[in-house]
Image (tube, rainbow, N blue to C red; front, top):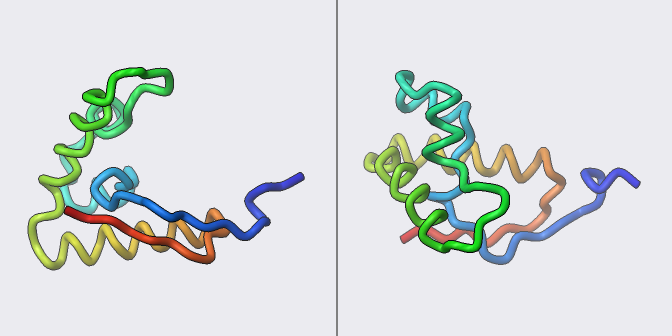
Length: 93
């Protein structure tokens, strides 16, 4: 079964934890793929909440202007569309 084709909902999605590599490179072209993977993406197997919180701080720094917020939000909506998400509640603090 192709789960991408099924409609989905996201009830609690943090904008600052959802930046794609593509939008990060638009905002800060100096970020390499390796930096993105280590500084923005939490480890797959982690039992430490601080591992996740450290990554959100890096994304937050790239969301300081109205234009950056617009780019990040539009990119997240694109990601949701690609994943078949039909309803999303986005959080941003």
